Length: 93
Length: 301
Image 1 (cartoon, helix red, strand yellow):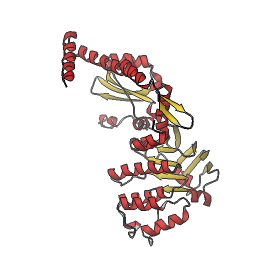
Image 2 (tube, chains in turn red, orange):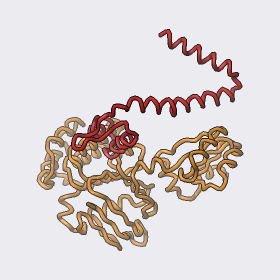
Image 3 (cartoon, chains in turn orange, purple):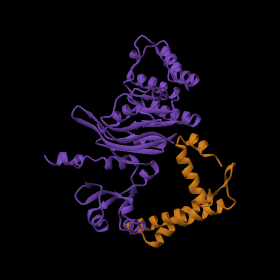
Image 4 (cartoon, chains in turn blue, red):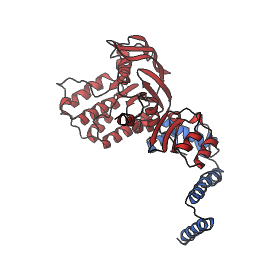
């Protein structure tokens, strides 16, 4: 993993901010520290990120879609067919 | 280690109070943003730290010494602002040579590189430069001197957008290469917040807050939507800022600690828009002069 100083240079941010980001990822077990060597990506990192994105990000997006559909009085069938149409289109690519 | 320590410092200009019992300290090798409205006392504070002026009351220590009339503090600190005066007889190259002789950490390759990059010629004279070029040259002196304590007072005045961006990047890159204590004053927190570790916010000569930038970004949330729903959701909560939008919509700002995550999610489901408040806006709300919003001026007539 890049060090806090490399990240600071890459994104023009304060190294303390970069360190904060790395520590947040370490707290979640996505990164781990090796004393004197730096931060490394843990073996379960991918699994953890996928789980989080599915259960937080995607869930919230779906909630928003359903809310907006209700506001616009779009029926469940219509909403599902819209999603299916999009899925077939994406699938063809 | 603490580089700057201020205890109850006040500064009067004749009968006008510029600073009033200001207390704070700044740790070594941090970049701190000094933020405040016009006339809040930013420049006065930086001049006190550099030892250009003396406090009326209170104690100020820089590198554990009183900065006024102190050669050690002068040799280890630099204040960059738009009123830096250099002898009119010296051209830019001469000024750089003089700075190199005075500041022990002076980094000539950086000075030459920046001078060339910003197309400033050594044979030119400081008082013949444009506003933006003056700020650019002063900034180069400030960076290349690599002082353990580097103070920038509104360093980007007159610089165009491209130069400002380059300056911020240069500041960060040289800080990474050569860590030092930096204080940067600006009205434009949104422009410098990515560089900062801490924010020192002053209002009417007093310290309003001194926090990591991360905490300032997380401090407030904004709620926007129908007045009736906002009233219902936000009842008994302290509102920091309020602006009506049309007759039945409202925009309100409150401290994040006032509302729980569940409350906010509930509010979102009822159709209110919840957004984080960026650090710059948070500071504007905190330094509100208590005269309402700008719309009030127009609504009176």
